[in-house]
Image (cartoon, rainbow, N blue to C red; front, side, top):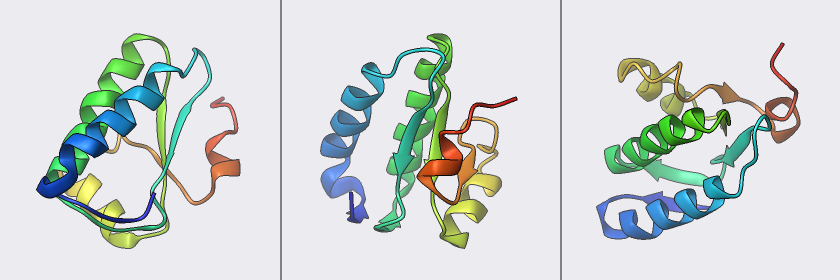
Length: 98
């Protein structure tokens, strides 16, 4: 996915994240690669946090792939580090937690 995620396309973002998370099977992670997204509005973070909670209830961990410092700062400022762990590549995000 690329471009901007904001109020103008929140419904599409929510549908995309929700539908893909629904097929993730425990114990495997659900990896969301947001490296090509230019802007994440607060609604985008809210969708990710909500879906992370739902995934956690099913035994699936959500993992974000990003190299953007602003994403890390925003997640930290919002207190979402536990819900939205970040990785620099899909490969590292797929490594089982241990």
